[in-house]
Length: 146
Image 1: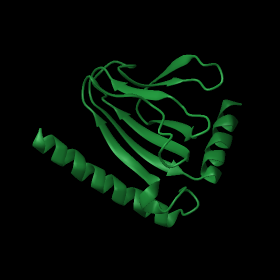
Image 2: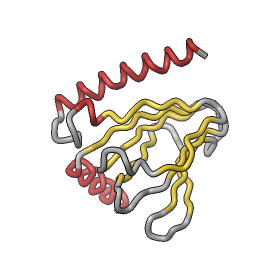
Image 3: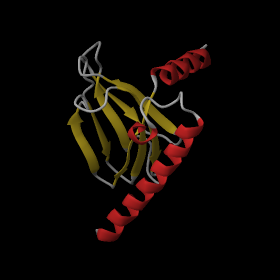
Image 4: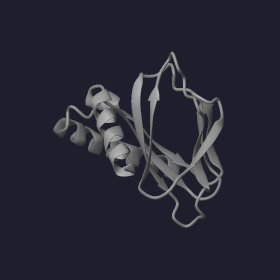
């Protein structure tokens, strides 16, 4: 276990360095100062999960999580599950290569969510982005749909 944890910690440190470089070069992209904007590097081993939570007590605002699921397992083997704020229904978004999840963390309208990797490994990198960057991404996605 120690070697794996050391490897994950080293990888997290390197990813944080890259986020800091990105933030220094694109100050309007980050929500907070560069070090606070890095929300973490997460590794989920096979059958790993993060139980239902809201992140409501943490830094508020938009988050983007870049996802890297294990390519050796079938689609849908890892995912983000959440309770839709508007409908109250539980939804699941399957991971795929080069995929990202984006949502807003709010104390007044918490987003209940969980993460699971039923098979294979799942990596994710979380970044708190500015409202301006979130609006830009959402606008571009709407443009792509047309």
